[in-house]
Every structure is written in C-alpha cells, then in structure tokens.
Amino acid sequence: MHMTKDEREPSGSLTRRGLLETIGLAGAAVLVPSFGRAQTANRGESLSTVSTPPRDFTPGAPPAPYPDPDVLVVDPSFNALRVFNSPIQRLWTGSLWAEGPAWSSQGRYLVWSDIPNNRQLRWLEDDGRVSVMRQPSNNSNGNTFDFQGRQLSCEHLTRRVVRYEHDGTVSVIAEAYDGKPLNSPNDVVPHPDGSYWFTDPPFGGQLYEGTPDASGGPSNREGRLQPRFGQPVGIGSAQRELPTNVYRVDANGRVTIAIGADALPGAPNGLAFAPDHKKLYVVSGGNLQVADVADNGRVSGLRQFAELVVDGVACRTDGVRVDVFGNLWCSSNAGPAIGYSGVTVWNASGALLGRIRLPEVCANVAFGGAKRNRLFMTASQSLYAVYVNTQGAAPG
Image 1 (cartoon, one colour):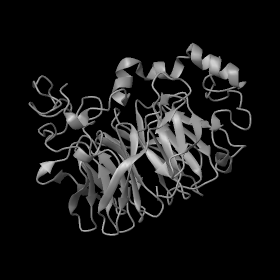
Image 2 (cartoon, helix red, strand yellow):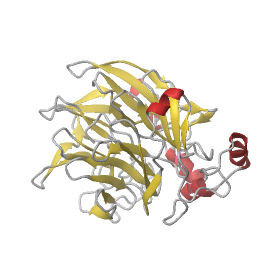
Image 3 (cartoon, helix red, strand yellow):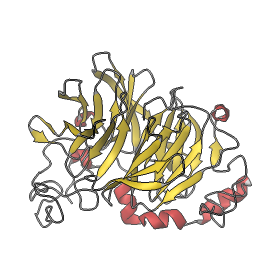
C-alpha cells in the first residue's frame, strides 16, 4: 500500500501494523526468547511474564505473590504510586484488538472497543460481567467520557467523532474539515471549556479495522479493493483527502486544526491533557510529543517529551493517560522484546518511574473504579487491571 509522508513512522520504529505482520499477536504472547529467561534468572524473579513457564492468568491459576513481580520499580518514587498488595488481574479475554478503554463513573462500568469485531464491550464493576454494549460500533477506536458524563467515540468506519447523549440519541461532533471527510478519528479527550480534541490518523483505511478508501485513494490506489463489501449503504465512497492533523472542536461545534501534520514526526495517535490542561501530550510515531496550550486553545512549543526507550528497547506507545500528580501512564508495544510490553510510567519531567509487564502488547489504558484508582489496560486480546496509589486526572 502506498504511504504518504505523514503515514510513515520514523526509521527503526515498530508500528502496530508492522508487529502484526511480523510476528502476530499470538506469537507476542507466547514466545519466550533466551534473553527473557536470562533476565529472569539474573534478577532472581520467581513468577513473571518472562519466567519459564510464563505467568498463568487463567481462572483458577495460583495467585501471584505480593508485591506483584510484574509491577517494576525503576525509580524509588514509584513506590509511592504502586500498591504492594494489588495483583495484576486479567479480567477478560476474547477480543481481536482491544482499544479505547473509558470509565463511566455514574454507571460504574468500563467500556472499550474491539475494533475488528466492530463492537464495544462493557465490564461491570459489581460482578465482573462482560457484555456487548454496542454492535455494530462503526469500528470505533478511542472512547472517553466528558465532564457531563457523556460518552464520546471515534469511529473508523464512518470517519467521525460521535457523542452518546443522556436521552439515547447520538450527536455527530465532527466528520469533516474544510468540506473534506476526516480520515479515521483515533482518540478524543475533553477540555473543561467544553471543547473536544481528537487525532485523525489513517489507520482505519483498511479492511480489518474499517474500510479502504474508494478507488484511487491512498489506501486503495489501484482500486483492487472493494470498500463497499459488507458495509451499510453510503459507506465506501470516501477517499482520504486530509493530512493527519490533531483537531479541536469548540463548544459551538467549530472544527479547527490544533496541531498540523507537518509539525509531527508521524501520524498522531493517543492524546491526553496535563492535570491543569496547560499541556497537551500527543503520541506520534510511537513516541510522545508535548505542547503548551493557552487559555484560548492555541497550541505552541511542540517538542519531544520522551523517546520511551527502556534498557535499549523501544516501548512504543499507542495511548496515554495522566494522573493527578502529572505522571504519564503509557501503553507499551515492545514487539518481540518479551517483558517490555505493558505500561511504562514517566513523571512530568520525562524520567522513567516504573513499568507494568503484560504478556500481550498493550494498546491503551484508563483510570477507573469508584475511586478512579484502578488502572485498566486493553492489551491485544484481553483486559487487565491493577490498583494504584493515584487517581486519573481526566473524567474517563
């Protein structure tokens, strides 16, 4: 597939698509290379994702010891953020690609997207039951809740951002810019001023997680793919026309470019605000950028926040959330480097504080629970969670 300038990742980076094509999600979960075993032996760790045999997350498996060996302290300050008697739990498995977790404080449930299966799933806090919340979901990706408790979703298939109202209706927040259809909105976050900010990469222009462009578009140059197969009437006629920008939708519905594609090293993905909303963090090319946000919504000073490299391993991120202390909790996709996928935690100065190891590539995270002190992690085919000694700064 032809890739334009802002679709390409920086040299040496490992994209989600590249990982899937190279080793497959199943391989990422079960391969235990020799360096992983040596790492375990050298550090004297007994039960972990890199131990032999690998840690067992299935129901009825022996419990993990306390403190959980897969919650790793890198900087001593991380001890104040971890809970020493909280294990990593796999709450559910069965997705094809789990994404976009968001917590409903009023409903006390977690919603997330299973993009290829075209559905949104819901985990209920009271009994741990998982059910289908919406199907079809228009291949939704990122989800969040705004300051009024309304759910927002980024839809790949329809190339739009929608809001689910309290009365059950659905409002379209954004579907075009300058008269041209959006590419495939990926992640969205609310601002206290009533605006919404979202990223618009090209990742939904494919058969597996959306639909390709109409013939001649960047994801279907030769027109050999039929984007209308299996789709509702009206889907499949759009072509990608816009750069991969970050957008802001003000309270009146006006859509403006917050960060242009030319300013970013790669297509934008996840995003999050600092607790005071004076900084915006943007995932681009698997790394993190940060920019200053003025009271009028203008963005300036875009710069690299961190490379997200741990022990020489690139821990590329897809999604990020910020806690009330300003620490960043980033999903980690380390490809075949077993033991480095999961979550990395950084302080506001860009120093690595700790890690959470998972046996699957992690796409995104969200804070939830009644006290907003439980970290939920959507990781490839599964949903994981662990309690932490902090709270999420965003509503959901």
